[in-house]
Length: 576
Ligand code: ATP
Ligand code: MG
Ligand code: MG
Ligand code: MG
Image (cartoon, rainbow, N blue to C red; front, side, top):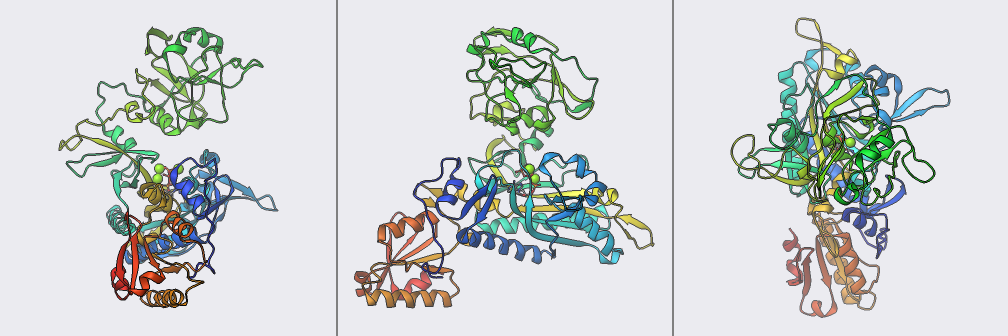
């Protein structure tokens, strides 16, 4: 590729709404361009990265025996009604109507459609096992799309679905995928961890997330350096003994709707002194009066620090109490309540608040809270007694660093991760709901045993950048770099020798199968180098008249602090 024919468009500054480094760098390097909230153009450079990610995934999926197909982005609601997800899924599922008023969804995942294919096409146990996969656009109307491709609304996922005749077969299919995922993530050249994840009631231990390690990751992962124990926080908490730290959540159970406290009561209970002691308690209410004071009849949430995640509820202002009070993040809310924020409803106070001393606040205990699901509430919801510092999310948990690992082999450590893949044993959940069966060797119909396996194709480049960057820009691993190498000729338009050498080297590298770009834009060296460092091409070769006189080029890896001289004749071997 020649840069003059390609499209390169870099920015000195990132737009102000980009919060994390991968988002900033992807915008600055011209990999993506925002169209709408959580919806991005994949620009030519970005698309090259995505295509490389896809190619690795496709190769390893095929190697593992999966078969590629492609299912429609727009899917009829009927199938989603069969499993109940059309109604159950909530606002993340984008529902649309056609000109005849028929309901459709834009696929956030494809269990329904693939199960429909299976029940029509897989008649006999002799056709099993089968694993269908696609690399296809997804849409999830995320509550808070953010961080660019990291949490988009429209994104690309590789999703695979296995069909087996019995649980043993399904477990073998699951293991084959778990292995394939290790090969895939090894090939990306990123530091990652496969961690046990919660599989709900059915899956036993058969759910793993693949987490790229990055300090900015949204997920907390728990591992033991002395053994191979690793789990996401949710799973680790489910396994943890209920120690001295207060348990934040209780299992959801049906209880009668509790009495609701009025805001006036709660404001009185809290009292102004709390403003000096509790740093980040939030009052949110369904209504405020014109002065901004709580005027609703219900307190909706009382939550710990974080971002303003609950944008459809208003912050209630108790005079003097508003400063420093913020909303919790979704992850924190989920960790505390064991349910999505959307399920939080009126809280019935069972005990009054007691203000003890500076920062030592006995917050309300044993709440009942719930639910915008009829008659569903949580009982015995409690806060941690001490409010954590902003970075110490782990302190909110029932599992903290230094705890004994469940296998008894050492102490737990906690780090942050970005979920880039997920493998999941589904059992017969979807095949039963959709009555998808095959005939077994005795001619009896049986429900398929299923598994599903996702990889965030467009999230992966963002995760790679979170993990690998410096102040100058992105540092791509070779496997997914938009170009593996760049040739930067200095003074190409003035020097015939430089031009000829650059063209020849370019042709030689192309012939050797190296994904190289020749920067023939005629930029000055400083601007040219800054562009490629921002874009993050791993290998740079600089040609200059002076160097060529000694038959030398300058080679610099993106991670090197200085260039080294390499004989022009040796550079190809140097790159290989
Ligand atoms: P998250 O916990 O981040 O919301 P998820 O558990 O909802 O992800 P899955 O349903 O397991 O996601 O989907 C499989 C993969 O798709 C995820 O592991 C992730 O890499 C990717 N993915 C999910 N949601 C998004 C999104 N909004 N933007 C980009 N990639 C996503
Ligand atoms: Mg999600
Ligand atoms: Mg997840
Ligand atoms: Mg997941």
